[in-house]
Structures are given as structure tokens and as C-alpha cells.
Picture 1 (cartoon, rainbow, N blue to C red):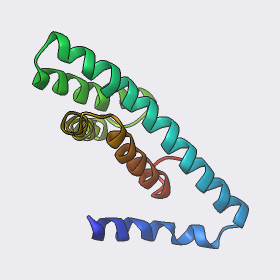
Picture 2: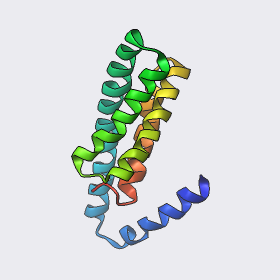
Picture 3: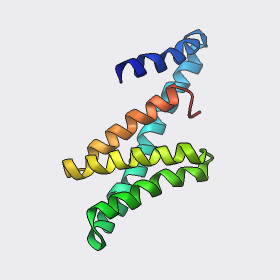
Picture 4: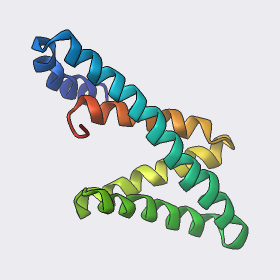
Length: 125
């Protein structure tokens, strides 16, 4: 994971040669995007949907439904189907974190970190 982080961070090298105002704007965007997006997605998918589904169906089924739904909803914002399916594994990870810690906050933090990485790698701009 560390090698992946270092390797993907190399993509930021061209940013170092940009104007300071561009770099500042990128960092502000990244932080705001990470906070807002991660908080909203986690509250909706794990806070509301997972907790409500667990009352009606088994925990496993609730986790599967919310994880697949989380991944597939990204198709609506233009993310390719295959990548959206891969995002389902992210949803699975976040659901497991929520269930193990009995708190939504750790999943929000993990989601924020992933979103920051996606912005800084140029996947989201």
C-alpha cells in the first residue's frame, strides 16, 4: 500500500510547477470535496440505508445490497461500469468498518482519505 501511495503521488510532480494559486485551489477543492462527499455518502449509505436494512433483513444481505448499490450509483455520475463495480468493494469495506466499530465516523475518515487520493491523482477534478 505504501508503494502504491508513493507511486501515485508521483502524479503530483507536475502540480509543483503550477502557479501557487492553482495549487491552493486544488488543495481547497480536495479538502472540501473529501469532507462533503465522504460525509454525505457515508450518512446515506451506511448511516441510513445499512442501519434501516439491518432491521428488515440479515446483516449480510444489508451489507451486500448497500455495497453493490454504493458502487453502481457511481454510474450516474459517469464512472464506467467496471470501475463502479470495483467501488462496491469500497462500500463493502466501509460497511465492515461501521459494523466492527459500531460508529460511522471511522468510515467517514477512510472515505475522506480515499477521496483526497482520488483528487490528488487526477481522477476527480
